[in-house]
Amino acid sequence: MSAPGRLLRFDSFQQRHPVLGFPLAVRQKYSDDQGGYLAATIAYYGFFSIFPLLLLLVTILGFLLRGNPGLQKQILDSALGDFPILGDQLQRNIHSLRGNGLGLAIGAIGSLWAGTGVALAVENAINHLWGVPFRRRPDALRARLRAVGLLLLLGGGTLVTTGLAGLGTAGVSLGPGLKVVVIALSVAVDFGLFWLAFRLLAARAVAWGELWVGAVAAAVLWEGLQLLGGYYVGHVVRHATSVYGLFAIVIGLLSWLYLGAHAMLLAAEANVVLSRGLWPRSFSVIVELPATEPDEKALRQRAQVEERRSDERVETTFGRDRR
Image 1 (tube, rainbow, N blue to C red):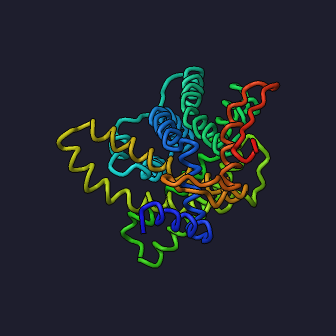
Image 2 (cartoon, rainbow, N blue to C red):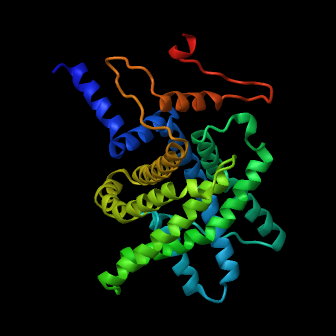
Image 3 (cartoon, one colour):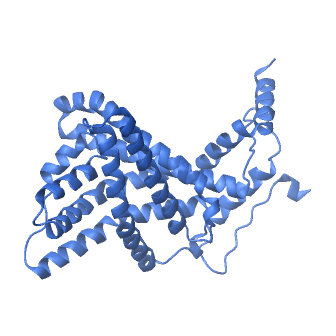
């Protein structure tokens, strides 16, 4: 059978079998939405946001737990545990803000404001995946306030899940059974955080029931990154650090953020494809086939994102529309 014939058979097969057609449709829409560029944007802003946010965290903990340095160190260790090997570097170089009350307040607000960059990048990406037109998105001030609120709300949950993950992966005193329980609890907390984030970040009416599948996928993928990332970075980045120094540390942190952004956005994309019925898709690239109805729906949604004025409407037509 010729190559075009094999492609046609495969395309027909995946359209008839959801176990194959659904993940391929998610991957296709992720490509249509330029998910790689969105993930790179999140990683970029995450890199510059993490240091102000850690500075704010250290400052708050130093103020609240002034009489309990042991607990303060334990919480910081759990938070920095998300970044294998790099956590030690961050811990040695991040110190709390100091000064009078007014200066401390200004510094804390400035750190929080600077740290919202990554939340804004995630908010933009989620709205892009859901096809929310620019004209319907929050203005700059409301988007920033929303990002601040989200960081404050999810910050505590992140400390809980990183602490549980740290116990599950590094707690030498825990037995295998208890480690499994701790990891399961960490996944459960991750699920709640992602479920909440997916709901709050979308600037459109999205039902909670439309988001749980992606939240499960994001929680599992994130926990997998935590469990496997330490081993990978420990055998690759640790060796590179002795040769390239800080360059390897920067690349390692950016890579970690980039993989995490991909995992979250792919899970969010699965929510969109599932809730809007954007599958199966047609994938023939050599022999051109008519677009399926989910193809047309997905591409129309992608085009409508570009509506920027209240009186602007973007319409998409296909071959069948002209007949």
